Amino acid sequence: MRLAPHVSWTPVNGDVFFIPRPEIADSVFTVSDMVVELVVSNGESRFHFNGTVEWALDSVESDGVVWLPREDQLREMLGDYFLSLDSSAGGFVITVSGPGKAYHTEAELDAADAYARAALYVLGVEKPSALSSS
Image (cartoon, rainbow, N blue to C red; front, side, top):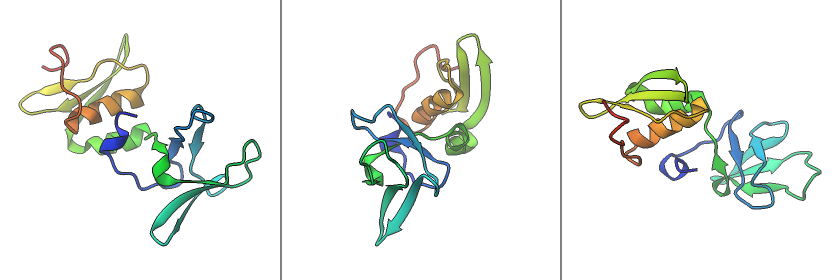
């Protein structure tokens, strides 16, 4: 969620998101023409929930959801800053180029979380700790 305010998102099929409302915040949705359809009309985008019977949720504004970028999308976000993805005892570590030196993320259990942490650094949101740069 820390990354969301710093990136723009144009939803496409296969993207994953959640709705930050207490009653459904634990549910993760995938944009798909079959279940969650992105409908753009008059410059506004909405997600239509086709065939949902669990709750009375027909649609939600796309700016009312939080995108959960996939590992490949996060790596693309890093672009030329990306240097490596390494496995360590604590999980995954991403190394990106930085001003004058490389930056290594803290180990994350999920590779996508490590990519997100690296993206926060590249975007200037996260500052390196003394142990994470070389």
